[in-house]
Image 1 (cartoon, one colour):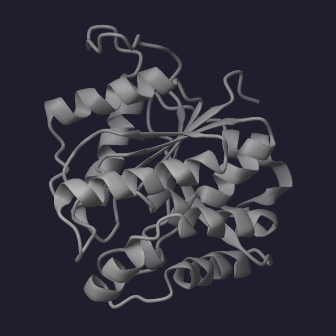
Image 2: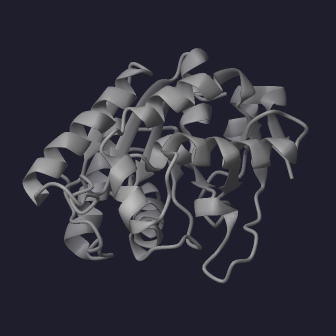
Amino acid sequence: MAERKVVLSIGAHPDDAEFLCAGTLTLLRERGWQVHIATLTPGDCGTVEYGREEISRIRKGEAAKAAALLEGGYHCVGCDDVFIMYDRPTLVKVIELVRRVRPALVFTLCAEDYMTDHVMTGRLAMTACFACGIVNIATPGADAFEPVPHLYYTDPAEGKDIYGRSAPTSHIVDISSVIETKEKMLACHESQRNWLLAHHGMDEYVYSMKDWSAERGRQIGAACGEGFRQHKGHAFPQSDLLTAELGSLVHQM
């Protein structure tokens, strides 16, 4: 079990966590964990109606409202949509974020997802977790800490990579008991329905999330599920903290 019951979701855009890991965040919250949801951008291009400043204000408000349903905090690193870069300035900001939150457990986006913002976010989060204890990387006001957090990658959109192949998973969490909370969190992102309809041809914003949750649930004989893969590279924790905390709700694949 974790000594620091703090979990951090690092997504690219507001609503990433709500689509991909909000159910698991809810289950952890029910077990006494402190929840933080962070995004690299404020979602400044996710609109066909507003200017960049206005949609950023709206979407950060929506993200904070969703996090508040879990009594959690919301953080925005301040990158621009479509321009998330794996560079020194951005990486230092993400390291600072991890050091300020001091999570034992981190969820982030996988490297096989449909857009580069998601790919870069996963890489930045991985390095930030690895580097959180490196004292010669300066982040004034946010001290280095050990150990490296447990890191898990979420499913890519629609559970497929850029070639259309099904994405593998190491864990599926049964979120059937908290799907209503996950739905309420996603519904906080009201500004996105028109954007996704115009750009992705996707209506019924919440239903698309529930359809994928049902598909992952079907694989474990449950109503709803969320899929993850654990990062087990050198220097990262080898123990399975997700299963340790959620027990029989986690199905290893």
